[in-house]
Image (cartoon, rainbow, N blue to C red; front, side, top):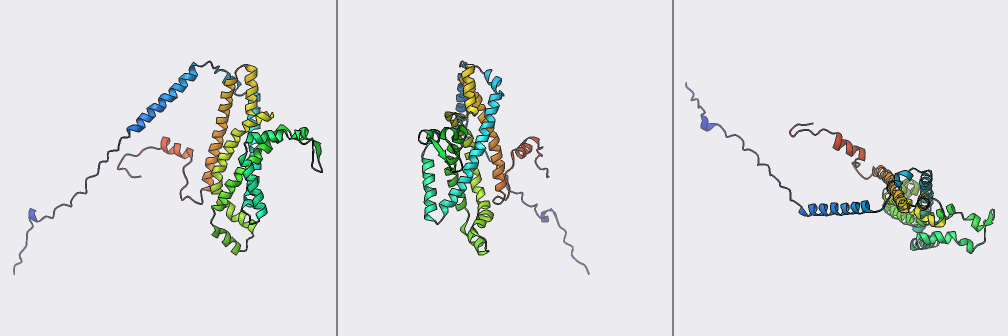
Length: 313
């Protein structure tokens, strides 16, 4: 008994699998407008630098007085005034926001009137009003304390009242927006668990509202730091006031203005970094992955070794 053995030839070999589609070679679109804009911006910047280089400016006076004892004292007074004024503004803003959201028409109306008045009048006008109230009231009498108004209303107290009470009006709207951003179901669930209204605010609503409150509050802190320069008009000696005095005595007023601007840039830059980390902290509950910190960005772009293509990690 014989069996036919079928021999396979070259024609019977299955063809190799077809190769995948050819990779698409994408050619990026060239944006010539970006190059033109960059060239124009660099040219304008160069013109500004050239104009200042041709001016009669004593640049050596800036490093000479940069760490002067009076300037350093002014920096510390500026920071102290910023912290105290923001503390008054934040505490007052939270109280006004709660009053504004209250169902009591009296407290809600008082809060609305306060916000309307202090947001509608300039800070400099408010400072002058507090400083010159001695022309209207000769004495201040609080029952337990009585003194002449001129002795009571010092430049520091004038600055704190003018800046802090004005800031409270803006912080009230920021806090109100943050409280309203929390879903009402959170409050209803807390009340269903037997939590009081104040405890619900402290433990549930405010921690969630901080994600909305922190970014504009950071902007307000930076703005407050710069606004402190206005209190020189009511004779409070801070950074700008000391810079003015040094400029008048040394005959270099413009140079001292540049010096003050440099110190303001240093302080606002430090506050901006702090604001970034604070926002990152309160973003933990809303973002799955936190944005990289500046140090992490530097580490990933400068110190990381780029692997060649085709090599897996």
